[in-house]
Length: 189
Image 1 (cartoon, rainbow, N blue to C red):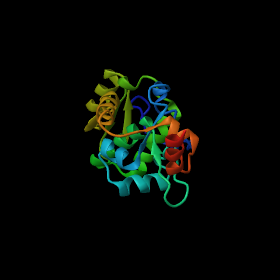
Image 2: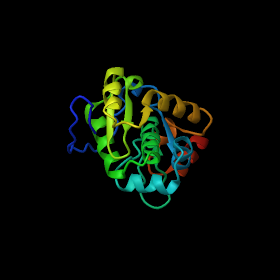
Image 3: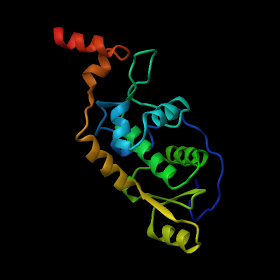
């Protein structure tokens, strides 16, 4: 991923977690998790895509990973934002390799003011723009052809999740590997 002012691309260090991508969500959704099916609906992706991206480390569930047969992955709000951004970039024709670099760059950078970030793509590369001047410079050079305003994606995901089921932290924290056991314990207690 590049910024228009630097214009260079390069490898970035991979971070094992994506929680720094959207730091400003620290407390907003920390006690809520969403099952894979819900994450797919909110992000507009297939379950097959979700599973592949989790297995390859592109977007891993931050609330709870799958632990053996029958266990459910639980995705946090941040994860679903990343899923939706990945989907939008794929829809523009950006390669999965370039998307991985873009997501890694955003994780490394630690975006604090998400509403001010726009991702522009020419179909091959992804560029981060944080000001109208950067967008103008990129567009004037004839490079950018598609933009994603991350603040808008945030609002869309919030709206989608408001109408979809979630798991409370009480069920998540008590028995992270045994959801059925947690529900039984909640009924008995």
